[in-house]
Image (cartoon, rainbow, N blue to C red; front, side, top):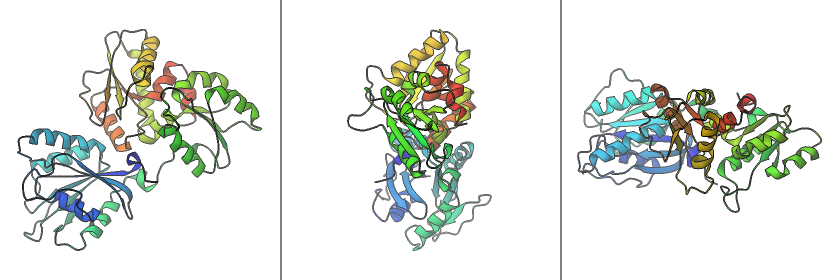
Length: 390
């Protein structure tokens, strides 16, 4: 089974037109992933390539359009390229013997502002010798001539790996001990895909099995019987956020309780920031704007969690006339007009994208939180829901 794209290391390849970005990717992938041409602006939209890059592991390369694209659609292409930065765990800047121009220097400032490690690849160095001063991670090469380019690139990349890819974090396995019993409450409602479970539930089950835990999967209607059937209480109960209220009423206070969404807030984002964001709900006033942010696009259902349930909970909890808007997809909209951002569980998004969004929100001093945390806050059980995971 292939590693999910959201769990892969995302490597963005950036630079001016015709510096050799696509040639580099083709060499690494050992196939023609991106079209190579002397014509400026050949790479139009971002090209994605998922592969196993040993010894790094599963990665997704993002080959972007040239930063100096002066074609008719160049401005829009550059705009798309800049948005890719938020998804990159590692940035690769490809230049040539002309060195770093303003384009690349601005890019480096963005990487540093978002705490994204980066590698500078100086291509075509066989044509003219160059030395970049003041930069640590620089690889001098000729992509088309250097037979060792793939080895050198991987060697340089390993040194930049983020900590969470060196030591892969667990979803829930670190919260319990091996052979512990964990109950997973999985409602089968309108949002559940026919014949299968949703992604966070599947990933959590696998994580717990890898940690040698015994998992007990039930619907909310079978939770009471499950608790009575167990000889010893479970070490943890994990529920879908939508069943939080009912589950909290059934599970005794001495048994730790949390949700899939809260676990993914810890895995994909910054749990403390999300809790801080939820506590800002009490400061909302009439006319304040709330952005419900979803990582993926999907067809909204009648009782959609992001479009119906959370907006209703927020209005009921605050008693305020809030303006609530939804946005879906990888693009991050202008957030300056909002007073609160509520992010989804991010099961289809890599951690870097969520962290980048948190950093941007912090810079603009806009509270940001997460689906599961907002739901537990509005239900008055936030402290209990995060006690085990903090």
